[in-house]
Length: 336
Image (cartoon, rainbow, N blue to C red):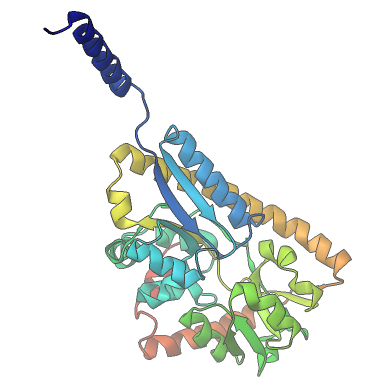
């Protein structure tokens, strides 16, 4: 004979468990995404990406977690980008010119003096041409751009740090210049007379100390913490191109998110851009004073017209060879 008391207890337990599962507002399984970058946790990039992770967590009510791996823990720059394309890593934040090996239009982003100003560059990056030739193909390759306002301003300008003073392009003749792995930089600096050597960021300080390279280019916001002026005492303010960062996510992972979650990721990326840019500006200003007093560095402000003329000559040759897209210069310069 069935014990009615036991049946009632079983029904009651079932209802309690059911309610526990379906209580409105109960969190579902958290989505966790990994992100890698080469800089330290205390760099502008490191601090900004932690802010991005915090914003994502807040805006998603804790349902999305971004884990930031600093100092190249997930691999070198290109390895991380390739990993995001393949889906082994979720997120990347790197300067746009490193995509020149995938999409020809990105080559202009590392070409010295291609843009007249950061404002002109931002207008171009918001144009239908850029969407058609860069953002859409990049999405097909496996990376969706989250930082669509293009407001992750690195720098805010670039410098050239050298063992001997550099005033004009001719001073670069035969100088061993450390560059990162971007083909456009290699071709452009060769045209300037330098001898480009690809060295990873983590190995750059030692390479300069050992004499493997005699010069390096660097955003002013990174220069003091990179400690390059402990070794190289001359800093030429070249402003060769307005560098901007791209925060992107693996396309399939992004598409698997709900519309609200996609909005969270993009809002967090664009909101963090302003924070990153301000950090870079502050660090640049503070770093100059520290390098002058602590490292006895010399800052050189020179006439940039000879640099611009040299760059235009190089640009025309690279367009003629087919390396740079023909006709794009005219489209960019039509933007005021």
